[in-house]
Every structure is written in structure tokens, then in C-alpha cells.
Length: 245
Image 1: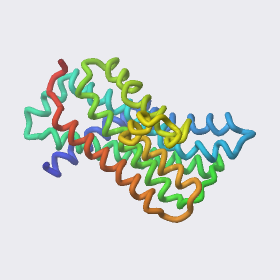
Image 2: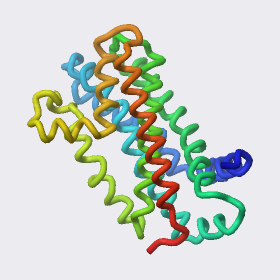
Image 3: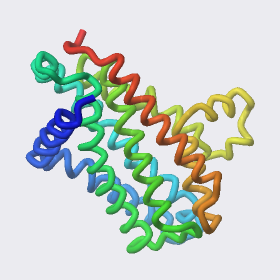
Image 4: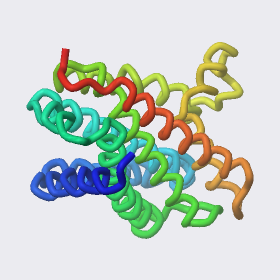
């Protein structure tokens, strides 16, 4: 890894995002709009919003970040940009870490906006510390980014990249414990949910809803989320190809 090349890649990606207002709106505005819609869907049931709001505060940014990064990396390959970059002294890990750094900064802004809106204007009531809720939201965004970069290596077109969203994230969404507590699922489904990173994101948010202070279980969940993001980045570097099939 070369720090200078990684930072140069991050600057290039941020410059592209700055000139793409629609993508910025997708990353920063859409999660806030979805959370607002959710709040007013349960306008007469504030307890329900307090129960599921924190989980979706992590899920919505993860979904959006997954979609944007998978398409963005695929576009690098289909336009020939990736092939030209890799003829230069730029390693695959430098490229992916540059993307991770750029979208990590976006995830910080995304989480700050969504957390401030949800806890402030929408009145979400959480027992745990606000900064830890923010940290989990950032971790979820980074996880979505890392998974998006990983699956982009297996898609030949932008349409195929979008198809990975239901294939990779929908099973996690159904089994993460948002609809049914994981301990009440059939054994096979519970075992499957135990290896899905989204389960730990929802668990962390759920614990922050009811427990004050910084519990070891929340820290463990956050460590699992970070570990899965790093693993996805490593696998993405190993499977990154210059050309689409």
C-alpha cells in the first residue's frame, strides 16, 4: 500500500462525487427522506418508531452505500478507467482503500445528517449514548460500501450490479431480527443470521435503544461490523479485475 497513491485516489473519487449532485442526493438525502417517511408512518405509534427506527438508521445508509459504490466501481471498469489506472504504479489495494477513504468521509456526513435528523427533529428516543449510535451508523455505511466494492467484481453491467442488492442484502434484511427476534427463528435460519453482518448492526442499534452506557456487547457488534468491512475490502482487492468479462 502506498499512502500517497491512496490519497490521490480518494481525492479523485471525491472530485467526481462533487460534480455529481444526483449521486450525492442519493447518498445524503435519500436515507433522511426514508427515515422521515418511516416516522410519519408511525405518527400515532411513537413506541414503534423508537423500536425499529434505530435499526433502520443503520440499514437505510447501508443499502444506499452498497448500491452507489457497486455501480461506481463497475463504471470504472466498463469505461476503461480501471485498466488505465492499473497500468500505472497503482496497486489494487491502493485503489480500493482510496475508494474506502472517499466513501468513508461520505459515510461520516451521511450518518451525521441521518442521526441528527432522527434524534433531533424526528424525536427518536434512545437510552444509549448518541455518539455510539452515530458510530454504529457510520460502521453500517462503511460495511455497505465494502460489500458494494466486493460484489462489483462479479458484475458485467450496471444492471447486474443492481441485481446483487436483493441477492446479497435482502436475505440479511429478512434474517437480521428486525421482523422476528433471531432466537425465535428456526435453527437453520438463526445459524444463517449469525454469519450475516447486518444482524450485528441491528443488534447493536437494538441494544442502544434500551441500554444506557457503553456495553461490551455493543462494542463486540461494532467490532464484527468493522471486521466484515475489512474482510470485504480484502476480498475485493483479491478479486478485482481490470476488465469486465
